[in-house]
Length: 95
Image 1 (cartoon, rainbow, N blue to C red):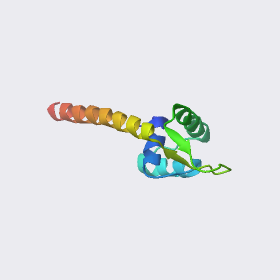
Image 2: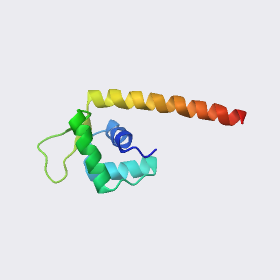
Image 3: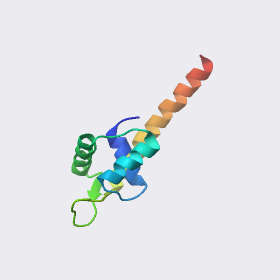
Image 4: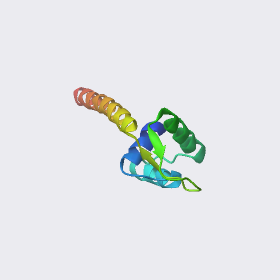
């Protein structure tokens, strides 16, 4: 799974983080290293959609949090991925 949207939202579901902390967290839980351009592009898109929001005034290490809409979107996406994983596992068992 390398979709930056799902990775960033999953990272923020565990709590507020700034960009570098998100990169480290994503690498730890997903084994994927997002480059700064990919990460900050995703942050900009997610903020524009209202799925994440900045916390506080900002600055060099601006923390973000997931919003209610972002949480709902993440839950829907993870549910869909779960169905795909379960189906793939069943098909492998029967292969």
